[in-house]
Length: 146
Image (tube, rainbow, N blue to C red; front, side, top):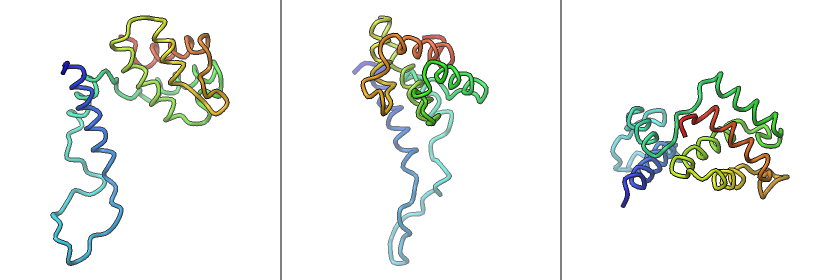
């Protein structure tokens, strides 16, 4: 298996593990369960998560100022891109960065952006022109090295 595939799988696994920290029921007194960390604790060091994410091509979440600039850029293209779901727009942008890491063909980058950025009124994407603008906003604000 190639290194980048291994890194991507590792990152996905780490993110899945950290997302599964909610407790759905309280243990009963007679349950023989080892003590586990509280929901707010993670046994995975933040540095390890960042390292795995970087290896998979996922840049870190943008700083608040950069986040605001990115969301404003998307809203300027079409308010339905963000549609009041800021975190979803950030997540899609970071995922697009990961896709772009190994895809250098500009046409394919635009196509994947169009497939990724959808809304209720645009279930098939916003079209190639807006997708190109979205891609530019992603690349400028979230992953300028790709």
